[in-house]
Length: 292
Picture (cartoon, rainbow, N blue to C red):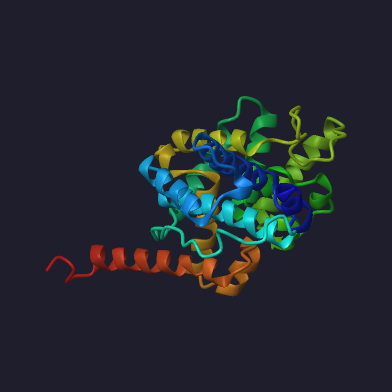
């Protein structure tokens, strides 16, 4: 019931629902192993579970996510009258370590874009890969948003793409001239093979479009081809690069927030710290007094 409510009322994405399911299943398994049940668990028993998670060596971010799922479950149960109390309401989670997002230099991104144009075995592969990478870097889309784009969003040589993000929220993102060219060439290919798929990047899988896991592996391949450590590169790192490069070029933080689809400006503000770090490294490397 809780998961159905998350999908219907909050528009939670499938990946989020699967994560909730995994975390709550683990919590329920722990309780059952100790002769307890989810519907009667107390605050102390929830805290015991979190202690057990820490003892397993789970990262603070993982423990915080599991507590978030548990809080959501009991808040829902209380609001629906399934429980008279909310045992998780006063439980504080582990502090998440603050870390700057990984990013790439502009030259490294250009190398990845060049790799996408050259790596594919067939002309179709190269057109698809080029379109994917150009759209990703031009818009900063989440990988799940990119691979699931409908073909109707790209028709008519658009200057802007309508993207459906988390919670079903829609936003407009502008396209660079290079991205528009790559998109036009990919659409011309789809028309030449008379594609009937409603997806911009169709596949034969259950979803009907390329998967984020497939694209994640593809980007790793581009990195290896470009001579960049694949461990440093992922679709999400390119999203970070998009935001960081815009900010270093003088873009307004609010505009970047809108393009990334962040609900809270505080989430976008982390890129100012990335920029500060890069500037500090620049000074320490090139300032004449840095050595002293």
